[in-house]
Image 1 (cartoon, rainbow, N blue to C red):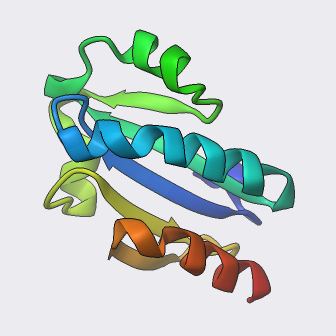
Image 2 (spheres, helix red, strand yellow):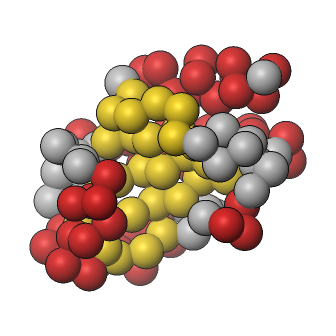
Image 3 (cartoon, rainbow, N blue to C red):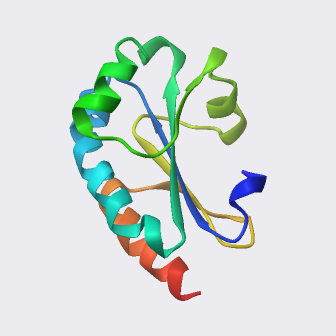
Amino acid sequence: LGQLQGKVVVLFFFSLQSDPSRAILPHLAAVHRRWKDRGVEMVGICASDGAGGLPEAVRRYGIAFPVAVDVRDKTAADYQVNGRPDFYLIDREGFLYVVDAENGAVEEIVESLQQK
């Protein structure tokens, strides 16, 4: 995350075993395309037990943002993730701005952080 300082960062915790997670992937690919040139980075963090078929899903949905497998779900534990999909937004200064954002509110929060 240190390399992303100065950008708005959306951490997307997900699992390919979760229907809502899979359903939102095409939308997130579109959101990333819309915001990437305006200083917004998205990072996908996939649950280790839900990562089967991850490379295929990344290709199928046109995911162009970094996606990592959360080995032993350590990152999710550090962020106290309580479900998937789950969104955490970090402002340009590197501060965690929103925890557990609602799926439908992510773009609105990104836009407000862009203006901050």
